[in-house]
Amino acid sequence: MEIDAFVKRILSASAKFDWIKSVDVKTMETRAKIRLFLNDNFVDVYYNAEDEIVSYAYIESNKRVFGANNMKIGWHWHPYDDVQKHAQGESVTIETFLKALEKELRKRDKIWKQKPLQ
Image 1: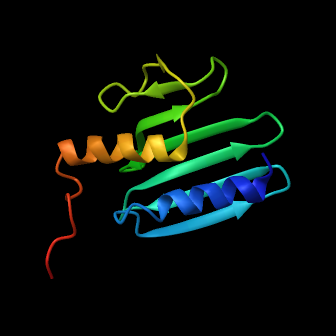
Image 2: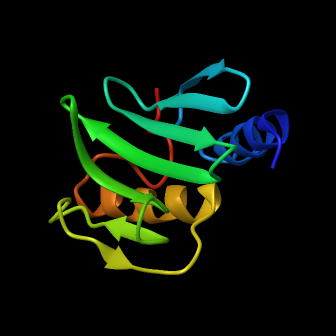
């Protein structure tokens, strides 16, 4: 997939999640690095078009605490409670990753089901 198409897909998907507050996109010829900010925490999205590598990582307090990628062993998850583990899985889209992250964050009361009243 071309870099522009990948970035467009990420931006389109992230716009559906109101807990994503802002986005930062950096692209090079064959790579894209996208950061989806929740607040002080964020999701790093990496794409290498040459090798078709995709990585999603939720970063909390400067540490990866949840993720999924297709590096080396094919698609696998790094579970929230055991990020060093490699749990084999099917291909992961950004939508699938963000939905799984949302579920994990809600379990931990880190995001609300709806925006709080102001």
